[in-house]
Length: 237
Image: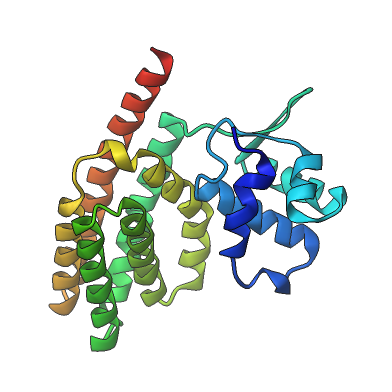
C-alpha cells in the first residue's frame, strides 16, 4: 500500500498556481483537490505528520487545512486514527444533485441569452475532445472535459453569485462522477445531451436549454446512484 508521501509525489508536480497562497491555504487546496481527484479516496486515513512530510511543511498549516476540510464535510476526525476522508453517501449525493439540477438549469438559461459564436465554439470543441477520449476509452480524460463543459456554462451565465453557490458542491459532484465512472453505462448519451444543450443555445431557446440541462443532470444522478449502490454492495459482500 502506498504511503501518503508516495501518493502525492507525482500529483504535486502536476498542480500549478499554488505558490501564490500562504501555507495554510496551499495545504488546503492541495488536500481538497486530492480528495476531489481520488488521490485520497473515501476512507483514507490522514495524519498531520504524514501530510507535513509529503508537503514539506510544518504541522501548523497542515492542521489548519485539515480542520477547514472537516468543517466542509470532506473529512471526519476520528479519535486515535486521525482524519478520515468521508465516504460518498447516497442520500447526500441525491440532495446535491437536486440542487445542481436546478442551479445549472438556471445557469444555462442565463448563458443562452449571452453567448456568442466564440463561446459556442468553445463548448463544441470540448464535446469533440470528449468523443475522442471515449474512443480511446480514456474515462478520466472524459471526466475532466465533462467538468470543463459544465464549468464553462456557469462562466457564460456571467453570474458571480450563481458561480459561488454552485462551487460549494462542484467538488463533491466531480468526486462522485470519477468514483463511479467505471461502473456506469458507456457515456455517449451524455455527449448527445451536451450537443442538445448547445443546439438549444444556438437557437437562443433558453427555456429549452434549461429543460435539457435539468434532464441531463437528473439522468446522470440516477446512473451514479445505481453505480454507487453496485460498488457498495460489492464492498459489503
